Image (cartoon, rainbow, N blue to C red; front, side, top):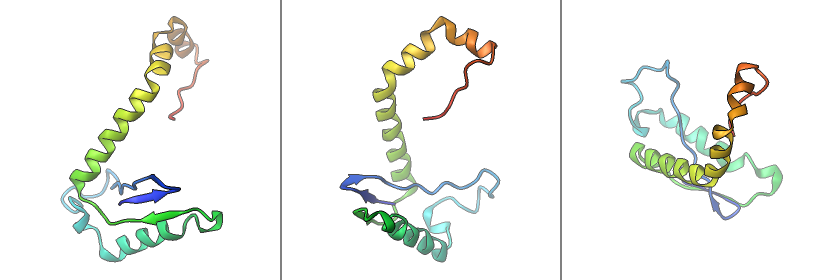
Length: 107
């Protein structure tokens, strides 16, 4: 779903749990209209207490969501390339893993 937060693009993606039947949710049109309405309303009001400037756009296709997600991942990798290279090339990294002295946290 297209979404603007504070003047910046902050698109929202609906993810279907792995235990959902694959054949049931192939496109956005397979999700119940009432649920899409609830999700959209949530994003209209979820930052209302912060006086945030948000704009809720339209639902997009699966291919748009995949493209947006891939582009986001590419940007993340570019921004974090040096940090990742430093962390993963550190010889002590593997020692910390073996010694359980290093916990990997998602960003």
